[in-house]
Image (cartoon, rainbow, N blue to C red; front, side):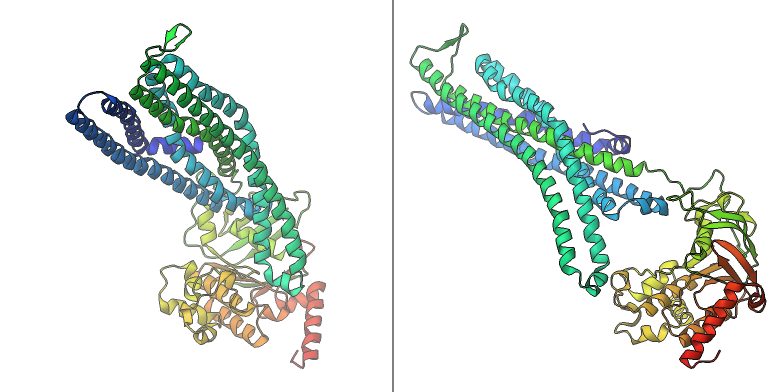
Length: 598
């Protein structure tokens, strides 16, 4: 039996399906053993001297039909109940895993490959589903049907039954020896599959880069190496699996041949009047009893095969459950504290007090150091600095994607580490540098932040992001499918649709992380004007690489090497911030070269 804390609760939840299915399975196993007995009786009647007893044969035929009917409906019932339960278990585990994946932090996904996670959601769950469904059938049949057959065989003739038990003992011994080895081979197979999935997913995602650098051939060769390792792991597992099955089939075939050969001899000797005696036991078999005995052994073949399959399946299922359980038991380092406060009626005040931060993967290197500043509700704030100075990291902290030190980050005077995570994230709308779009329509991408948004609200958001005209020019307007990650759109269109999505949320705090870098200057100015007007009274923070993007901000934060160099009005910064003054000078030179106005 496959047991585990993440699986046991489903056995209890669907006990009635398992109970009904097992009862139907036992009923089928019980009545099917009448078949060899009735067939043996028919053979004896047909072999008897004198006139044929038609009534008795007719009665036996009706009994056979009755057994067939019970087996038919019984098999329908156990298939419906047991397989239904196993599919529900798979669905429940998949739902748990998906919910778990949503709760895990950025740190986990930085350390775990996407391919591994997808493998757990597909092949591993399928193995668990297969075992809880078909594996249950194998357990019941190998135990109950096998036991019933053995009892009936020994009741007929214990000597012949003893010979028939040889394959059962060999299968059990062989299964114990092979089970652990099979599990190890299956785990290795899954790990190699994970790596192949990772490689494939990464190449499909970056296919444009591969083509741009004409690396198709080298990537094909690299994939061939990864695929060969996966193939070799599959072959190693298949060899063990096939060897196991082949030996079982060979043993069963040999024993069946021996039973038929020796059984025919025993029947001939008995009919001739000189029955064979073994170990002092006289074997008295007539033709009908031989047919019945062979029928019993034929019924024993499936339990023996099921036992062999069960050993291999159990090894795979245990390995898969171990991987799934490890995922479900992964620590959720970003979680609500006890009695977390739910933020309500957020005004948009943001404050950092001696805030320092280091990424979990590199805890000894601080990306930000002693950041202290306060943003008043409704302010338009710019954030500038050289690449890698910590601009994105600083504002990502507001969304609680990582844990921060208590008493360092506040929203409306509330320590975000003491607040409900959902309410914190609900109060902040974030437009990242990498504008991610779902493979859906333009309208649904915009309304992702507000699923119940009306068409007018969606269009208003598009106009705010200055992308409404582009959308109207699409073949199907707002019903145009963007493709995976918005592949059918330009970089500027993706940025503006992402901005429209964030604006529609109407969050108290809006963060734009260099979100207009892919648009021309005129479009950028139009968007910034919309932000100044449309976000009036709400806090907006713009991370920018161009001074023009934040020139009209109320205040600008200048970061240098992870520290605050200055935080003041644009006019004051030219006097007190060397970094800002240098950026203004470079912007002026760029505009002059392009023939623009400084």
